[in-house]
Image (cartoon, rainbow, N blue to C red; front, side, top):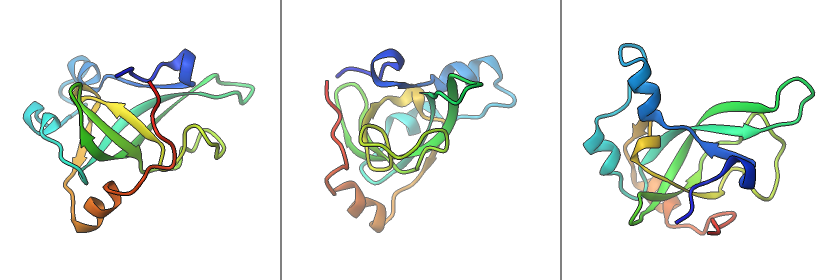
Length: 130
């Protein structure tokens, strides 16, 4: 499955493991086995780099939650569970948009509850296309 690409999609995911490696005392991430053991309904916080055109900046970086929908051979498919602050609502990347990610992108985890499991089973606003 294709990873999000900044030039193609207008956004991409940052490597949380790399951030942690650069500053292990100040940039905490969950243990690897927890990041690799996510299940539908779990929430994963990821770092997004988003293309913006606001006159001053061309890139915004936001930390947002993604609801895990399913496990894949390469990691996970989830849906964005936040509305990005840096961009206006659109049909390509917004709350409910499906996206792929892997354990290296996860910087925090919230364990699923019954409501999150039910939400994970719903059809996403937009599907990720390879």
